[in-house]
Length: 211
Image (cartoon, rainbow, N blue to C red; front, side, top):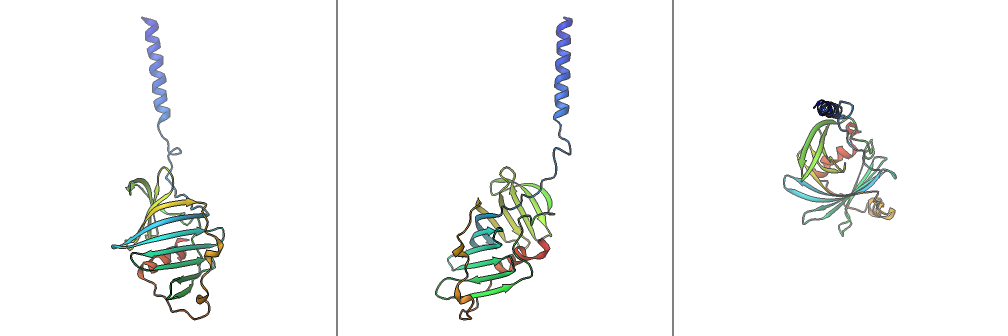
């Protein structure tokens, strides 16, 4: 009986040691950090602002210093929001109204690592995905899928929400689509009204407090 007893003792020690070594340490379980945006991607966003719905066709192109939001208002018009890294933005329509306005800001588009320094808040289920959640400068709450590291959802301090429907890494819009129409430059266009939802988003895309 002595031999089986010794075997049991050895097995017990091995199992105990394996349990000790499998315990997580601080080095093995660091606080998650947001994944930087890819230098080029295409995303479809569904926006909800107090029941006002929009679909945004977003083309992010850090490589060429530009960002494009094509905004479809529910049962309404399409607004083109074209932004350059030199701080220039154009807001225009391509319908018969030929509306266009421009703006010049001190900073350009968001850097890929614009979420650096965000405060980690933990994990939460959003839109059916388990997400890591961060908050930055009390302006935006950003939700990223724990498994794929893709953005799922973000919320502005105003309550305006973005739901990410597609996220195509590396997708790029052809160069010809990035040209604002000629009536943005010859003073022949009617000024376009920028609604509150666009005004809310401009500080995120251009505000130096987030850069």
